[in-house]
Image 1 (cartoon, rainbow, N blue to C red):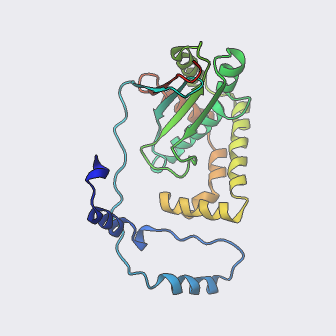
Image 2 (image 1 turned 60 degrees about the vertical axis):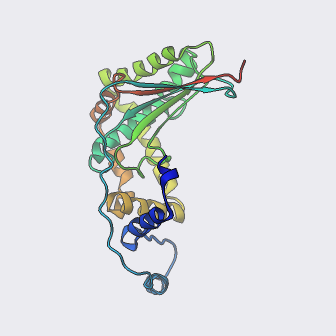
Image 3 (image 1 turned 180 degrees about the vertical axis):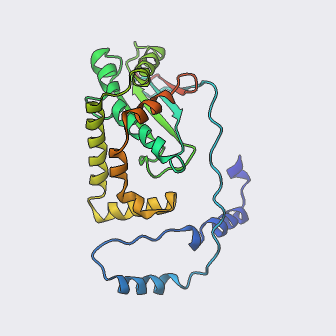
Length: 261
């Protein structure tokens, strides 16, 4: 409805307001001469009229206080699935707490040794696939508040959604109650650090990382600090993160498949 009521003037106003030089980051990486590069940047960008940056809107939302549940019917889907979403701490203003959630996500879902992979696919055989991710764009460090942790599970038709949900919540509760062994956290942390370093291995990866850190956090150098910040996360921080994933405030979206019939 909002899109249908929008006008060309609305689009022009949005562009003029938010696509301003003061609201952008230009990040250049590579084997280059700094003086020459600055001359080229000024040659092509000095002519763009300066405009003040708009105030950053507050995108945070009140934390949920109840379960929200929805159902999607897909007549072409070959198998059912369910997604569980939890609100997580502010990744900008509460980064240390958020980093506990980053490692909790790794511990739950990443790799064959992860808690949900073992429980859902191997031990109980409730699912054919599972994954978890922070934010909606694939990079847990390129997000602002409010954001969420989503776990999605594809499961056989004979396994009920509630059975899958119960198993997921039980695995989260184990971390919330019992904590994380130091050796398991060390393995998970090493994996997360390796992924960060791999992303920064190319010039393009490093450049994008610095740009995102400057744009989101106001500190480009944070991109080079994240691996060490992850290494400093304690088992207590991960346990605290798990305690924030309550089944009483989760959002659940169930996919009912018709393609297998």
